[in-house]
Image (cartoon, rainbow, N blue to C red):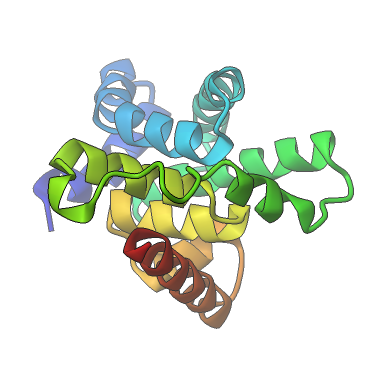
Amino acid sequence: MDASVDDDATLMLAYAQGEASAFDTLYARHRGTLYRFLLRSARDQALADELFQETWSRVVAARSRYTPQAKFSTWLLQIAHNLLVDSYRRKRPMADGDEAEQALGNLPAPGHEQPEHVLSDFERRRRLQRAIEALPDEQRTAVLLRLENDLSVEEIAEITGVGRETAKSRLRYAMNRLREQLAE
């Protein structure tokens, strides 16, 4: 494990004791990961910006209560995920199955894609990005946490507040969908 990850908890505890530079280090270390997670999960820059600020505000507010029970990055992403879920609930109190249909409707029409052998690395990454964006919210979150943050199923379950088997299923369904999308 990276030494910087090991001392995140130490930095947070130092920040709780009033060492502002410890927060600056944590912020510099985790801002990119947090923002990418929020932007790709929310798919709305204004919402991602708002949740990014709110997540860090919550970290600041919780500094005196912080106890290193999980990796700092796991704790940080859990705060962000909970804020994201809360924002969905405020906007759509009764979520329905139409979201997946809408997302799938945003995929490029068959016949408008270039042949596989001509695709550049950029085009392959863009196709993967579009396929991830088309996943239902829970599956997209699980995939982003796994692929971009290299988190375990247990950590994904902890962040998203579900059981290990549920997190594992979401990840499995998402990966199967991605394989199908990218095989087309």
